[in-house]
Image (cartoon, rainbow, N blue to C red; front, side, top):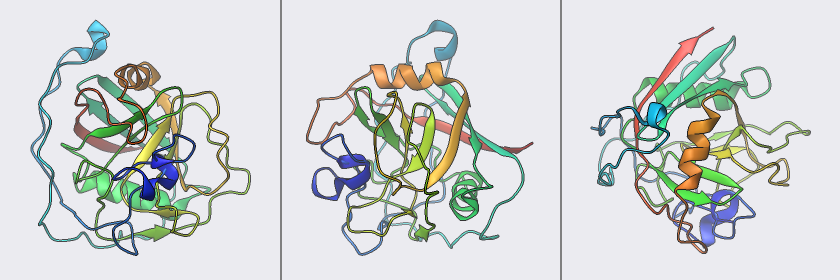
Length: 234
């Protein structure tokens, strides 16, 4: 429940593994923020099929909150590539069905918000979750976006969606996101959709294979750091 509804269980993650949530310490989903951060360099993880060992980054806090994204809605074809110490993967943004959510996600990537952040939560055969500047499931960019998910939203393997606290309205998002690694989470259509992994699912599986200590917090057994996130049109 830590990922989707984790406010109760883990800082930033759903604790039970049935939901994807963030841990909310305020009415919104974001207390800490940052615009950039130093990140470990990534080597040939994708070529070797392993994850490079990196240090756990320090939590980022005390920086100004980011403004809400402009434009507020995104259109056209866009991709985001995330490079980690386990390799890279690329997400096709679902601008057609979730223009506000994808506008926010793109804005955060362009601001280098995700550079140096971790995948702090791993739930076996379920999801990997990251994007928290606090590193424990409690942080965000200083703003939130609300956009009703599609009624037919299905959180199946390769889908990327936004985590939220259980108390927040459906479709609320800050910066924390998750990638579905299992066949089907069975979650209801309550989480805003970012898009779908179109390349590098082997990297996602490599991250998932690191595993965690299990419930209630599902904290990753080793640091997985996003060294760089980039956005491209087309």
